Length: 316
Image (cartoon, rainbow, N blue to C red; front, side):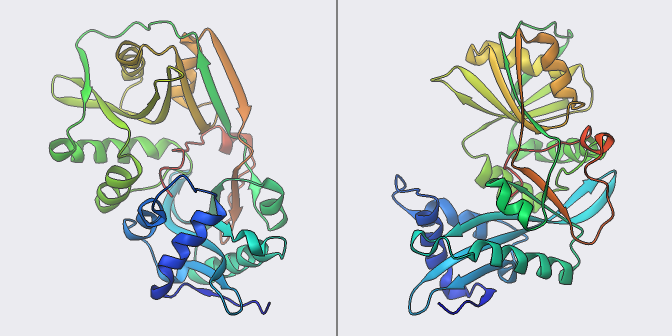
Protein backbone atom coordinates (compact mmCIF):
# COMPACT_ATOMS: atom_id res chain seq x y z
CA UNK A 1 0.00 0.00 0.00
CA UNK A 2 1.10 3.55 -0.68
CA UNK A 3 1.80 5.24 2.65
CA UNK A 4 1.15 8.92 3.36
CA UNK A 5 1.11 10.35 6.87
CA UNK A 6 -1.15 13.36 7.35
CA UNK A 7 -3.47 15.07 9.79
CA UNK A 8 -6.90 13.58 10.37
CA UNK A 9 -9.71 15.22 8.43
CA UNK A 10 -12.73 16.46 10.44
CA UNK A 11 -14.92 14.02 8.50
CA UNK A 12 -12.77 11.05 9.59
CA UNK A 13 -13.28 11.10 13.36
CA UNK A 14 -15.95 8.40 13.29
CA UNK A 15 -13.51 6.21 11.37
CA UNK A 16 -10.82 7.08 13.91
CA UNK A 17 -13.02 5.93 16.81
CA UNK A 18 -13.67 2.67 14.98
CA UNK A 19 -9.94 2.20 14.34
CA UNK A 20 -9.16 2.72 18.04
CA UNK A 21 -11.93 0.32 19.06
CA UNK A 22 -10.64 -2.39 16.73
CA UNK A 23 -6.96 -1.83 17.55
CA UNK A 24 -7.38 -1.97 21.32
CA UNK A 25 -9.96 -4.78 21.13
CA UNK A 26 -12.57 -2.91 23.14
CA UNK A 27 -15.26 -5.19 21.78
CA UNK A 28 -17.07 -5.23 25.12
CA UNK A 29 -17.97 -1.59 24.48
CA UNK A 30 -21.28 -1.11 22.76
CA UNK A 31 -20.31 2.29 21.39
CA UNK A 32 -16.78 3.18 20.29
CA UNK A 33 -17.75 6.85 20.03
CA UNK A 34 -18.88 6.97 23.66
CA UNK A 35 -15.52 5.68 24.87
CA UNK A 36 -13.05 7.43 22.55
CA UNK A 37 -14.71 10.68 21.49
CA UNK A 38 -14.03 12.53 24.79
CA UNK A 39 -10.29 12.30 24.11
CA UNK A 40 -10.89 14.54 21.12
CA UNK A 41 -14.03 16.48 22.01
CA UNK A 42 -13.39 17.27 25.70
CA UNK A 43 -9.70 18.16 25.50
CA UNK A 44 -9.46 21.99 25.36
CA UNK A 45 -6.01 21.77 23.70
CA UNK A 46 -6.91 19.31 20.95
CA UNK A 47 -5.64 20.26 17.49
CA UNK A 48 -6.56 18.18 14.45
CA UNK A 49 -3.08 18.65 13.02
CA UNK A 50 -1.69 16.69 15.98
CA UNK A 51 -3.84 13.64 15.16
CA UNK A 52 -1.71 11.80 12.61
CA UNK A 53 -3.15 9.05 10.43
CA UNK A 54 -2.35 6.68 7.59
CA UNK A 55 -5.17 5.74 5.26
CA UNK A 56 -5.35 2.35 3.58
CA UNK A 57 -5.67 2.18 -0.20
CA UNK A 58 -9.34 2.13 -1.06
CA UNK A 59 -10.40 1.73 2.56
CA UNK A 60 -10.56 3.29 5.99
CA UNK A 61 -7.85 4.42 8.34
CA UNK A 62 -5.01 1.93 8.75
CA UNK A 63 -3.16 3.51 11.70
CA UNK A 64 -3.03 6.60 13.87
CA UNK A 65 -1.07 8.35 16.65
CA UNK A 66 -2.26 11.35 18.65
CA UNK A 67 0.00 14.04 20.14
CA UNK A 68 -1.66 15.50 23.24
CA UNK A 69 -0.54 19.11 23.64
CA UNK A 70 0.30 19.88 27.28
CA UNK A 71 2.44 22.21 29.40
CA UNK A 72 4.40 20.38 32.11
CA UNK A 73 6.76 21.57 34.81
CA UNK A 74 10.34 20.30 34.67
CA UNK A 75 12.63 21.47 37.45
CA UNK A 76 10.24 24.35 38.01
CA UNK A 77 10.14 25.47 34.37
CA UNK A 78 7.05 25.30 32.15
CA UNK A 79 7.79 23.21 29.07
CA UNK A 80 5.55 22.37 26.13
CA UNK A 81 5.11 18.60 26.10
CA UNK A 82 3.75 16.29 23.43
CA UNK A 83 2.04 13.29 25.05
CA UNK A 84 2.01 10.30 22.70
CA UNK A 85 -1.24 8.40 22.99
CA UNK A 86 -3.83 6.28 21.17
CA UNK A 87 -1.14 4.57 19.09
CA UNK A 88 -3.29 2.28 16.97
CA UNK A 89 -2.90 0.01 13.97
CA UNK A 90 -5.82 -1.85 12.42
CA UNK A 91 -5.33 -5.63 12.84
CA UNK A 92 -5.33 -6.07 9.06
CA UNK A 93 -2.38 -3.68 8.66
CA UNK A 94 -0.03 -4.75 11.43
CA UNK A 95 3.56 -5.74 10.73
CA UNK A 96 4.01 -3.06 8.04
CA UNK A 97 5.94 -0.53 10.14
CA UNK A 98 3.09 1.98 10.23
CA UNK A 99 3.41 2.79 13.95
CA UNK A 100 7.10 3.57 13.57
CA UNK A 101 6.40 5.72 10.52
CA UNK A 102 3.81 7.67 12.47
CA UNK A 103 6.12 8.11 15.49
CA UNK A 104 8.90 9.53 13.31
CA UNK A 105 6.37 11.88 11.74
CA UNK A 106 5.24 12.99 15.21
CA UNK A 107 8.82 13.78 16.26
CA UNK A 108 9.38 15.96 13.20
CA UNK A 109 6.05 17.72 13.74
CA UNK A 110 6.84 18.38 17.43
CA UNK A 111 10.24 19.80 16.47
CA UNK A 112 8.58 22.09 13.94
CA UNK A 113 5.95 23.29 16.43
CA UNK A 114 8.35 23.98 19.28
CA UNK A 115 7.58 21.19 21.72
CA UNK A 116 10.30 20.78 24.35
CA UNK A 117 9.81 17.15 25.38
CA UNK A 118 7.58 14.17 24.73
CA UNK A 119 6.16 11.64 27.21
CA UNK A 120 4.30 8.38 26.91
CA UNK A 121 2.97 5.82 29.39
CA UNK A 122 2.61 2.62 27.39
CA UNK A 123 4.30 -0.31 25.72
CA UNK A 124 5.75 -2.06 23.84
CA UNK A 125 8.94 -0.45 25.11
CA UNK A 126 11.26 -1.66 22.26
CA UNK A 127 9.15 0.14 19.66
CA UNK A 128 9.50 3.48 21.41
CA UNK A 129 13.19 2.96 22.27
CA UNK A 130 13.87 2.34 18.59
CA UNK A 131 12.34 5.71 17.78
CA UNK A 132 14.16 7.73 20.43
CA UNK A 133 12.21 7.53 23.71
CA UNK A 134 14.00 6.47 26.90
CA UNK A 135 12.62 4.71 29.97
CA UNK A 136 12.66 6.80 33.14
CA UNK A 137 13.41 5.56 36.64
CA UNK A 138 9.76 5.48 37.70
CA UNK A 139 7.96 2.89 39.79
CA UNK A 140 4.59 1.33 40.43
CA UNK A 141 3.83 0.66 44.08
CA UNK A 142 1.56 -1.76 45.89
CA UNK A 143 1.24 -1.15 49.63
CA UNK A 144 -0.58 -3.86 51.60
CA UNK A 145 -1.21 -4.67 55.25
CA UNK A 146 -1.73 -0.98 56.00
CA UNK A 147 -1.82 0.05 59.64
CA UNK A 148 -4.22 2.84 60.71
CA UNK A 149 -2.11 6.00 60.87
CA UNK A 150 -2.13 8.63 63.58
CA UNK A 151 -4.16 11.59 62.32
CA UNK A 152 -3.74 15.17 63.50
CA UNK A 153 -6.71 16.39 65.52
CA UNK A 154 -8.94 18.98 63.92
CA UNK A 155 -8.75 17.55 60.40
CA UNK A 156 -11.84 16.35 58.54
CA UNK A 157 -12.14 14.40 55.30
CA UNK A 158 -15.14 14.62 53.02
CA UNK A 159 -16.06 14.73 49.31
CA UNK A 160 -15.07 17.91 47.52
CA UNK A 161 -17.91 19.93 46.03
CA UNK A 162 -16.76 20.60 42.48
CA UNK A 163 -19.40 23.29 41.99
CA UNK A 164 -18.25 25.40 44.96
CA UNK A 165 -14.68 24.26 45.76
CA UNK A 166 -13.08 23.77 42.36
CA UNK A 167 -10.99 26.94 42.67
CA UNK A 168 -9.44 25.67 45.93
CA UNK A 169 -8.52 22.39 44.18
CA UNK A 170 -7.09 24.31 41.23
CA UNK A 171 -4.93 26.53 43.45
CA UNK A 172 -3.73 23.64 45.63
CA UNK A 173 -2.67 21.65 42.58
CA UNK A 174 -0.94 24.71 41.10
CA UNK A 175 1.20 25.16 44.20
CA UNK A 176 1.95 21.48 44.84
CA UNK A 177 3.26 20.63 41.38
CA UNK A 178 6.07 23.20 41.59
CA UNK A 179 8.15 20.70 43.61
CA UNK A 180 7.96 17.84 41.08
CA UNK A 181 8.84 16.89 37.53
CA UNK A 182 6.35 16.27 34.70
CA UNK A 183 2.98 17.21 36.24
CA UNK A 184 0.66 18.96 33.83
CA UNK A 185 0.06 22.65 34.51
CA UNK A 186 -3.73 22.52 34.11
CA UNK A 187 -5.95 25.51 33.45
CA UNK A 188 -9.56 25.55 34.66
CA UNK A 189 -10.96 24.59 31.25
CA UNK A 190 -8.80 21.48 31.36
CA UNK A 191 -9.92 20.65 34.90
CA UNK A 192 -13.60 21.09 34.04
CA UNK A 193 -13.73 19.40 30.65
CA UNK A 194 -11.05 16.74 30.79
CA UNK A 195 -10.11 15.77 34.34
CA UNK A 196 -13.40 16.25 36.13
CA UNK A 197 -16.06 15.64 33.50
CA UNK A 198 -14.27 12.95 31.51
CA UNK A 199 -11.25 11.27 33.09
CA UNK A 200 -12.39 11.12 36.70
CA UNK A 201 -16.14 10.82 36.33
CA UNK A 202 -16.03 7.32 37.85
CA UNK A 203 -13.68 8.23 40.72
CA UNK A 204 -14.05 9.92 44.10
CA UNK A 205 -12.60 13.37 44.76
CA UNK A 206 -12.05 13.82 48.48
CA UNK A 207 -10.55 16.70 50.43
CA UNK A 208 -8.80 17.14 53.78
CA UNK A 209 -9.96 20.26 55.62
CA UNK A 210 -8.96 22.20 58.70
CA UNK A 211 -12.14 24.18 59.37
CA UNK A 212 -12.91 25.41 55.83
CA UNK A 213 -9.31 25.41 54.57
CA UNK A 214 -8.49 22.76 51.98
CA UNK A 215 -5.17 21.13 52.91
CA UNK A 216 -5.17 18.24 50.44
CA UNK A 217 -7.26 16.52 47.81
CA UNK A 218 -7.10 12.98 46.46
CA UNK A 219 -8.62 11.29 43.42
CA UNK A 220 -9.24 7.63 44.17
CA UNK A 221 -10.67 4.63 42.35
CA UNK A 222 -11.68 1.73 44.61
CA UNK A 223 -11.87 -1.90 43.54
CA UNK A 224 -14.47 -3.49 45.82
CA UNK A 225 -13.75 -6.97 44.50
CA UNK A 226 -10.08 -6.83 45.55
CA UNK A 227 -10.60 -4.40 48.45
CA UNK A 228 -7.83 -2.23 47.05
CA UNK A 229 -7.69 1.46 46.26
CA UNK A 230 -5.86 3.04 43.35
CA UNK A 231 -4.62 6.41 44.58
CA UNK A 232 -4.60 8.21 41.26
CA UNK A 233 -3.60 11.63 42.52
CA UNK A 234 -2.84 13.29 45.85
CA UNK A 235 -1.76 16.90 46.28
CA UNK A 236 -1.26 18.52 49.66
CA UNK A 237 -0.08 21.73 51.31
CA UNK A 238 1.25 19.81 54.31
CA UNK A 239 2.42 16.26 54.85
CA UNK A 240 0.13 16.05 57.91
CA UNK A 241 -2.82 15.69 55.52
CA UNK A 242 -1.56 12.44 53.96
CA UNK A 243 -2.32 10.29 57.06
CA UNK A 244 -5.84 11.74 57.09
CA UNK A 245 -6.39 10.60 53.50
CA UNK A 246 -5.12 7.09 54.20
CA UNK A 247 -7.17 6.81 57.39
CA UNK A 248 -10.31 7.90 55.51
CA UNK A 249 -9.75 5.35 52.74
CA UNK A 250 -9.27 2.54 55.23
CA UNK A 251 -12.44 3.46 57.14
CA UNK A 252 -14.63 4.14 54.11
CA UNK A 253 -13.64 1.16 52.00
CA UNK A 254 -12.18 -1.22 54.56
CA UNK A 255 -9.12 -1.34 52.36
CA UNK A 256 -5.70 -2.39 53.59
CA UNK A 257 -4.13 -2.12 50.17
CA UNK A 258 -3.29 1.02 48.18
CA UNK A 259 -1.78 1.21 44.71
CA UNK A 260 0.17 4.20 43.45
CA UNK A 261 2.03 4.34 40.15
CA UNK A 262 4.53 6.23 38.07
CA UNK A 263 6.46 8.19 40.69
CA UNK A 264 9.99 8.61 41.94
CA UNK A 265 11.00 7.29 45.35
CA UNK A 266 11.04 10.78 46.86
CA UNK A 267 7.34 11.36 46.27
CA UNK A 268 5.90 12.28 49.72
CA UNK A 269 2.94 9.94 49.27
CA UNK A 270 5.28 7.01 48.64
CA UNK A 271 7.44 7.90 51.63
CA UNK A 272 4.44 7.96 53.97
CA UNK A 273 2.77 4.81 52.65
CA UNK A 274 6.02 2.90 53.14
CA UNK A 275 5.92 3.90 56.81
CA UNK A 276 2.46 2.41 57.44
CA UNK A 277 2.50 -0.61 55.11
CA UNK A 278 3.15 -4.12 56.34
CA UNK A 279 4.46 -4.99 52.89
CA UNK A 280 5.62 -2.86 49.95
CA UNK A 281 5.94 -4.17 46.40
CA UNK A 282 8.00 -1.93 44.13
CA UNK A 283 8.23 -2.51 40.40
CA UNK A 284 9.92 -0.45 37.68
CA UNK A 285 7.31 1.13 35.45
CA UNK A 286 8.86 0.21 32.14
CA UNK A 287 6.32 2.04 30.02
CA UNK A 288 7.02 5.48 31.52
CA UNK A 289 9.18 7.03 28.78
CA UNK A 290 10.43 10.44 27.67
CA UNK A 291 12.24 12.02 24.78
CA UNK A 292 13.92 15.38 24.34
CA UNK A 293 12.57 17.30 21.38
CA UNK A 294 13.95 20.83 21.78
CA UNK A 295 15.35 20.74 25.33
CA UNK A 296 18.53 19.88 27.22
CA UNK A 297 17.17 18.24 30.39
CA UNK A 298 19.18 15.34 31.82
CA UNK A 299 16.08 13.21 32.27
CA UNK A 300 18.00 10.06 33.14
CA UNK A 301 19.71 11.47 36.23
CA UNK A 302 18.87 10.14 39.70
CA UNK A 303 18.23 13.68 40.95
CA UNK A 304 15.76 14.28 38.16
CA UNK A 305 13.91 10.98 38.55
CA UNK A 306 13.63 11.34 42.32
CA UNK A 307 11.28 14.26 41.72
CA UNK A 308 9.01 12.46 39.28
CA UNK A 309 5.30 12.99 39.79
CA UNK A 310 3.05 11.17 37.37
CA UNK A 311 -0.71 11.30 37.55
CA UNK A 312 -1.41 7.96 35.97
CA UNK A 313 -3.20 8.41 32.71
CA UNK A 314 -5.21 11.41 33.78
CA UNK A 315 -3.35 14.07 31.85
CA UNK A 316 -3.58 12.55 28.37
